[in-house]
Image (cartoon, rainbow, N blue to C red; front, top):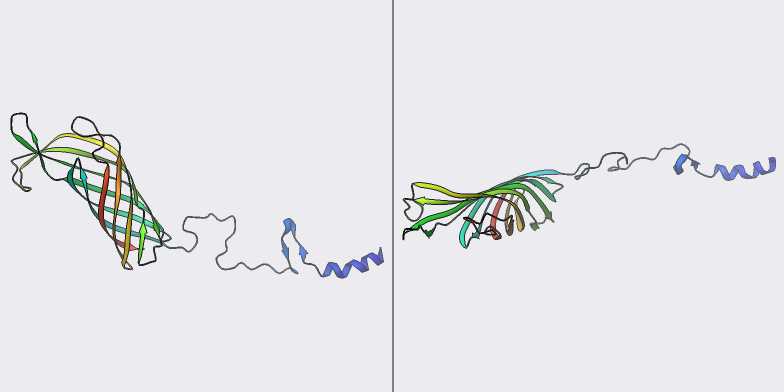
Length: 226
């Protein structure tokens, strides 16, 4: 036994000290944590430790057609940006069409227009945001309403005294899009792009069921910390 102990002692001293569950430390020295390391028990977030959280406020306008009439929309976006690459916030839009004529039942014509708006959650992935020119994919999920208005004492182009709502409908909407963004300044971006509106069916009395579905082309100005 003495001979065996004398033989094994030099070999044991040359090995690292064993710790429970397989962890090793050499002669009691503790492993130093590198910068950026975090304990495995720490709660992890979308942005990660030390990563940037920004925001932007944007103005948006676009053109489309509703029931084959020219339609214009304007609105705003407000979003937080996680690590430059994902914006999450809210968006709102208001729209109106050009005026159009319809028979009034007595041999004459009455002037009408469609007006409405919608809003909801905005989710916008941004690809290569640090490049001067890059793309984003905004998606709006929400709800809105549309009204058919009768205009009286109408004078071309937009002078009239009274507006009467003949019918109105609510709808749900999903509007995915794509934008090409230009980093004009560190605090300002210009974006051009398009989207497609998908809405639930409208009532058949005064509206075509899918009259809001269609492509839009628009322009956005965004201000914030990107």
